Length: 345
Image 1 (cartoon, rainbow, N blue to C red):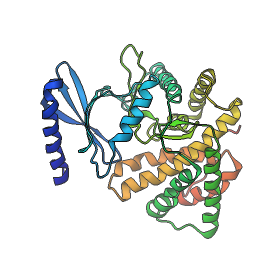
Image 2 (tube, rainbow, N blue to C red):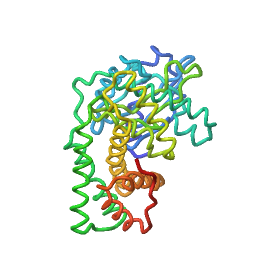
Image 3 (cartoon, rainbow, N blue to C red):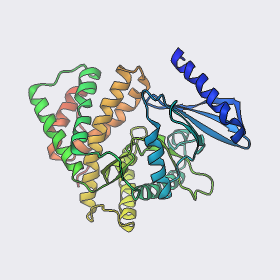
Image 4 (cartoon, rainbow, N blue to C red):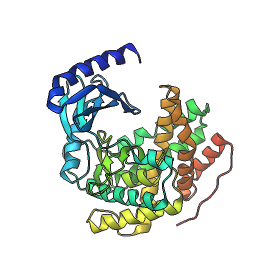
């Protein structure tokens, strides 16, 4: 722990002491709960017969207000999100309800029977449908310009920094053409509230009765954007490998549930499938750049373990659709292997 983190921990403990009586907090039980790719970190502590999560979000780097605003929007449509018990926005501290110690990613890695996995993901799909009915007032737009700018992480951090490769002029032109196609296609979709990281690390295993659905966390970066984005995040999870038959099963279940809920998904499943795969390609090219940056700039090298999975998802889509053939050739050069084609729709 560096000096700055130690100073913040002291400030956090002091703030908790000011609200301890209200929630019967036992400050001696404060312990790390998790951290993420940003500057945020989380602690768990006990209070009476329950436990709480404390968010530490340094205000010079993070703003707690979007977390509060989006949380209210999700709560209003029945999504299981943390309750905010106390807040200190000037210092970047929040006292939250504890949605549990186990997220989808952890329990899947520990080993679950298929029927348990199916139950968890059906609940996640229904929670997603509820989430997509949320009010989007005052949220930023995930527009074509933003979608396009995100893709620049791929050549800058994945190609140049991670693969130590310079693109040829032909490759640059082809890549920019592909980026434009992906950003335009996603931006033309119907828009709803987009979580942006609706995947296994951000879904908490629901309580035994399951009535509340999975706990949903890390939603502070929500935007108004393409309706296929979050289902693409779920079925092509950067942390958990799902084969195509499983992806299709969950995509069909989501599509039908969304139609039943009168969400504006395409009436033709084949077109919906194409759209969410193209959206996944935009997302996963960005993620390759993000994971490379987290490693090479921030020293968080454990993200590199997930790169082969993301590469496989990129290849799955690039190998299925003609406009992305130049990307497939670039991947072959970068990775030094042959492409393996999937089936075609």
